[in-house]
Length: 605
Image (cartoon, rainbow, N blue to C red; front, top):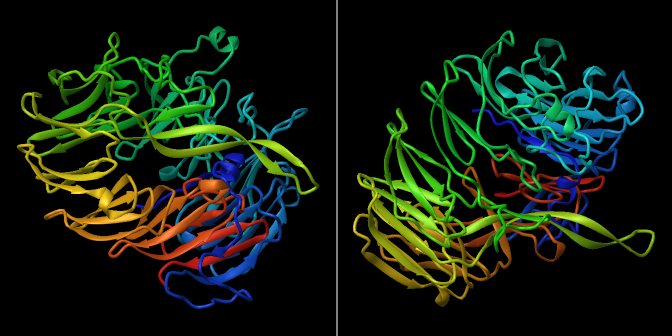
């Protein structure tokens, strides 16, 4: 399936991760003259070094896995080819016929190798008509522009706050249709992405598009709305809308209401809602499940709760700090769904199993008190396992001091997205799938609990800060207990399923354990401060954001050796990998950015 990447081009991309480090500094390696210096042990090799025509202060990203490399500022763009040669460069004001210029928002749509992509520009005019333009990334030509669409950037939205991985709530790109869904105050419009031609318009949908799902089987779009802010929304008779639209002509096939309010994450601004189509049913995950007949919009059943994350208490977060990924996503089987539920009165949490067709409650597990997070739920044969406690995602803004090139310092509000552990009573709970009764429980996780690794539905591997365990899933019998602190790599932070081994990512490095007996395959304490890991087509990367740096390590997981490292302080890059860094979808190349400069780095050569 082709992968479409939509990237925020705002201060979120530019500074959501700290970016004070030397550009293109391949740790343990010296480059020179823009040529590959060859690959040394423990280092990456530079493929090429090049420059943009402009300073890439907004977007700096590889497109279609590195087929193109795009760099933009507020007013211009440069595109390089896969060899670092410039394809085109120009000012937006000169490229666009409507003179779209100061683009507060930009985002790029990657269509896949050989298929090009789009650069969408928003030019908000405080005194005049808002402008939009769409450029062809491959050629730099303007595909279309318009001044018909107003208020696309919601009022009060700062330029650094992108929505939903780069899309605004008012503009969604639908991959399968190669079209933009544009939400206006009184209507929703579908336009062809490559020409701007209007396909259809409907005035029966109010508010921004909070989430949509395209049903390719029926050529239909199902979407829910964000509630607009202000008194005007109330006077306009706003309601929570769930609608199904014929993608060919815009006909509203049905219109339903839903329970709850769609909210946005603090930094990423993603909508906190999910939707799935299964057979003739639509499942909406918003504070529990709401299930609709996909043919007529009739609500069939629901299992909902009140979210406890913003209700006060020690873990409620603050205005500038919020916690996410605290509740496991539902698990679906052919005939049932398993949901983590929240008690509305006593704030307990528990699991419910519902019949997929009727919604009938088949069983409810024991209630678990004082549990902040239950981030993972697993189905293993005739057992259901719940992870109580573990890492959660933190999104926050911090005020940091920056150096002014002209002298002195200034304060800047910097966004962070990272994983952290919260102190709570951690455990693994195993339930009988037929009855929901507890089969066994382990509470041997005093410091923390990692995610679970399920092996062939028979064995579960899990660690706390200092030990690493294996349990027989059916009986709960402990198969081994390894003293992880003997590995000398610090407390466990995460686990990676790697064939016949489990890699334990820790505070100071990595340790690998054989699944069969828990014997240690290797341990390396060469890497510290890792806050996330990524796997791309068999290539593994670790990220370190400490001390205003952004370092990406390539790791050989067979032996724990470091293939190479790169740190960069450039703006742009992918919000997934951090400021100044992007990685191709294959994991074979890293792109490091700083201002006008860009470096392409080979991971395995």
